[in-house]
Length: 474
Image 1 (tube, one colour):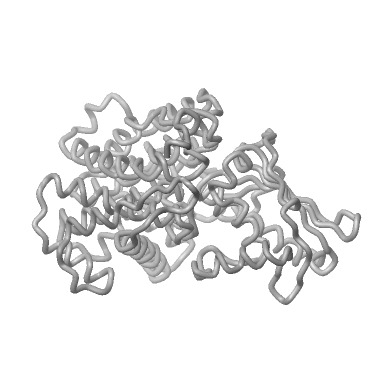
Image 2 (cartoon, rainbow, N blue to C red):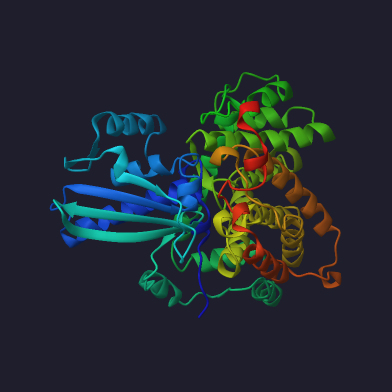
C-alpha cells in the first residue's frame, strides 16, 4: 500500500524555533491532554510530570522545548496563539508555579516537574513522557516521539488514521520519485498537477487553494517581519539580526505598508547579480531570525529550514517573473511539498535522525524542484534539480551552538536557497536521460549517510561547532 503524505503535512504553520524540538513536543503535550479529556481522566489528576529524553533533553533549553511543553499542556495552539501571549503564559506558570487548563482547572507545577534526561530511548532520539497522578496514584503515562517536521508518533501507534487515509482511491499513489516521474510522462502532467489531483481526495479545490494561500501569507508575513525587525536574537549568544540592515541597504522605497506593496517595491528596484544573492539571503535570513525569536513560521519541511522555500519563491516572484500570481505560488508549494514527502517516506526530515542534510538538504531539494517547474522545466528536470540540491548537502551535520537554532542554522538557510536556485539552473540545461544519479538514489544515499553519522552530529550539540566554538568569545 502506498503511503500518502499530504502537502499540508509537509508545510505546517507553527511557532519557532524548531519543528522537532518545539512544535513536536508542543503537539505531543496537546495530544496527551486531549486523551485525558477523551478518557474522562482529565478531572481526576492533580499533578503532572514531564520527562524529556535524548536530543530533546540535550538541546531542549536552546530549542525552547520546555516552553513548548508548558504551552501545549495549557492547550494553546501554535497555529493561532498570539505570539505576544507566549511570554505572558510562560511567565505566569513560572511565577505562580501552576498550570492553567481550558475550563479553569489549575494544578501545581514546579520546575522539577519538567526533567531533562540525557538517556536516549531506543525508538527515536526525540522522546518525551507525560505522567499524571492523583495524589500518589498513577492516572496516565504516555510517551511520544517527535520525528521531525512537527510530526509526532507513539511507539505503539496502530496508525488507524493513516490506514484510513491510505485506503482512499488516490489517482496517483506515490512512494518513490520514479513513480511520480512515470505518472507525469504517461498523463502529460506537471508534478503540481499530479499532487493537486491527489489532494482533491481529501479537500475541495477551494479548500486546497485557501490553505495554500494561508501558508504563503504566513511565509510572506514572516519575511516582511524579519526584514523590518532589528536588534539581537534571544538565547544568550547575542547574535545580531542581519536581515534588517541588509534589507535597508537594498531598498530605499519606504512608502509601503503591506507585504503586497513591499513585493511591488522590490520589483521596481534595479537588481544586479550581487543584489540577487543579497536579496535571496535577506529573505532566508529574515525567516529564520523570526523563527529563532519564537515567531510564527511554516515548517518547510522543518522550522530550522523554514527560510529556504519562501526565499526561493520570493526570488521567482520579484526577480524572475514580475507577472507571477497566486497560481504560481500554489504550484510551487504543491511541487515542493511532494518532493519533501519523498524524503519523509524513504529517509528522514529530522536532524536528530539525519543531521542537517535532513533539514536544509531536503528544503533545498524541495525548492529546487519547485522552482524548476515554474521556470518551464519538465517534471524530470524538476526531479533532477531536487537530486542536485540534495547531492551537495549530503553529510551536512547538525551542530547548533548552545542548542540554539541560530549558528550555523540561520546562515545555512541562505546557502540552501542559493544552492536550490543554482540546482534549478543546472537542471534546466540538463537532459535527464543522461543523468547518472536519480533522485531516488540520492534519497537512499542520504538515509544511509544518516544511519552512519555519529550521534554527536545529529542535533545533540555534542560535536562540531557546538563544541569547538568557545561561548566566552561570542
